[in-house]
Length: 221
Image 1 (tube, rainbow, N blue to C red):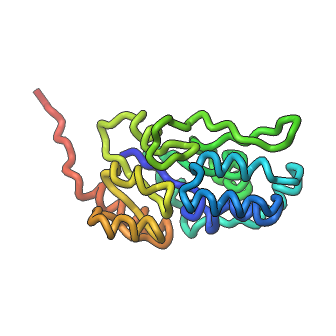
Image 2 (tube, rainbow, N blue to C red; image 1 turned 90 degrees about the vertical axis):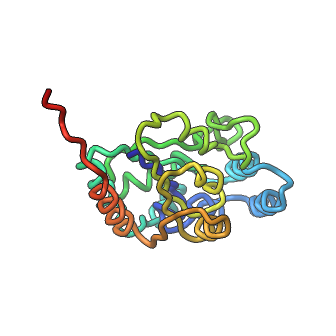
């Protein structure tokens, strides 16, 4: 079982990038957001342009990130995955530095994180989007379909998400956990999915599904 999980609004209780932008960026970030929602620019272009509008040093960013909480039960879910030797990967079209800071503040053990990479240049904050794929249907800085396709497919793929950046990859999941707009999307397309409000529910569901799987009988001959 391979588990991939979105971050903003899924692991975190709010959209971290929007929260940082609302507190620390030039208000032009909202114009870029509107352009993306209207289909005038890609999600990748929107995100990179917005990050460049942040007018704050690392200390100020960390202070804002210090207000972001994790979804109920996530720390326990990470512990369970580690006890069960289940691969858990955070895959986000957000910002790696934001994700790392928030998880570390909550003493979550290091996890693989695939996301846009925050850098500082002479002109200010910027993003490296080395997971962007030409022709990505969603136009993301991190093509979640490509990320999940890169992994070993011999075991079921679990995906956990909540929003627009998860729509495309949701169809590829063997087991889908969805809430908010992703749940609406899955329902409108008759995609099998599990609703969730916290990670205790996700853990309980996965425990039950794993218990129901037939166990292999060792060949004695």
